[in-house]
Length: 295
Image (cartoon, rainbow, N blue to C red; front, side, top):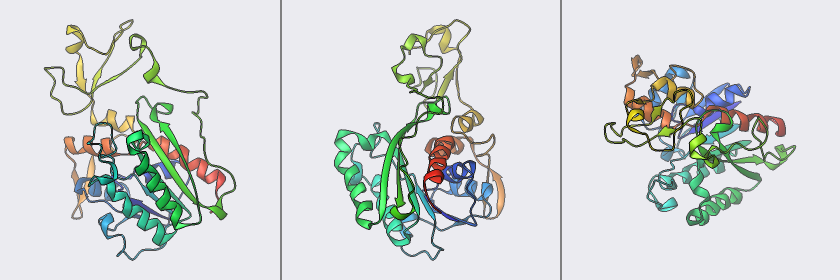
């Protein structure tokens, strides 16, 4: 099989597909951020970097069986500018549509933020669905997933999967939480939440990333740290962030720069992990694809 990862980042789709039992004779990846490229090369030395997604029409590669893309979400995100497909970043999904139309893979997977389903972006979402539909021959399905099904973080993401209709043996979604039922930490009363992530500085802490408050036995947290709790707020380590996204410890530590192995700086590791897909979610979607699709 052949895999093409667009907007690849550090290779979360590759890692998730591996976890689901897929193996690939060839992997191509498209990425422009130098540290993510270096890290991908370190962890997947057999993969071939094909440059920017904007050059997808020019690349000469084997036909991919699977194309994946977690296209930039800034303009769809609830903390973004709300410009949707008019935005410079989120509009890049058009190159993924172009790649699907050109290569006609058996399967393609698009991951993005929950914001694409918001009312203000509804027209944009349906225009993306229509663009894939207009290619012809694909069965399209999508579902909103949340990472706490697998890992202790709240990260809602939509997964839209297209499969060649003649390859489908059954419907793909819905996929249910492995534990059964619904996991929805955001509906819990704040006083009984077992954990939380603090993303604001609260005065003394620099606002450079996500922070952790470790609660003592019997202690509760109502969303606002008291004076004593403020002294126990610390930044998540790189390893903790890797674990929260389902990557192995040390996955983002090294990169290959001009053929040389080098350590990647801390702030870059945080950024790469923040932009990554959650590996167990990808693996769950990939397993269901394998169960219901002919390859």
